[in-house]
Length: 161
View 1 (cartoon, rainbow, N blue to C red):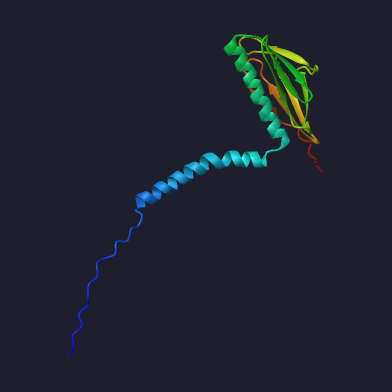
View 2: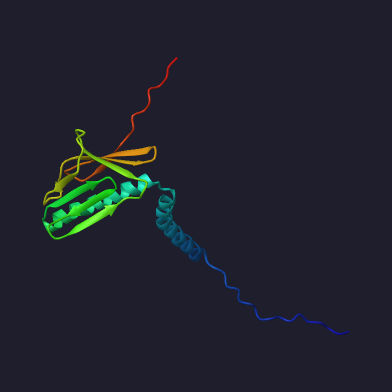
């Protein structure tokens, strides 16, 4: 009777990823997502008021930095649609979105058309109101630090029976 013998074939080398390799990939993907996704979400979900507030804060910071690093006075001309920075040698204009209007005033409520940043980046305290349709945001800008703080709207009185 014929005899059948099992033939041994050479083992096929199957390559699998190790746990360390898988964890490394998960960590890298998590880092990329943690860094990249939040700015995208903020931009997609932002309103004209948010974008204008960010634009004005950035322009204000740049004007203060220019005053301090160049040791020059910077004149800020405030407009209903943006602001201008002026030095003796330079001028820059910031324009907001078309449906946004700005109101600039002192903390005492006096309308403001221009103010000056001294060589240390300081100015008077300023109140900026950003409006788009029915929505409004008010910010108080510290003349000393340049910090922008959003004023919370007054809440409506509660009705008690």
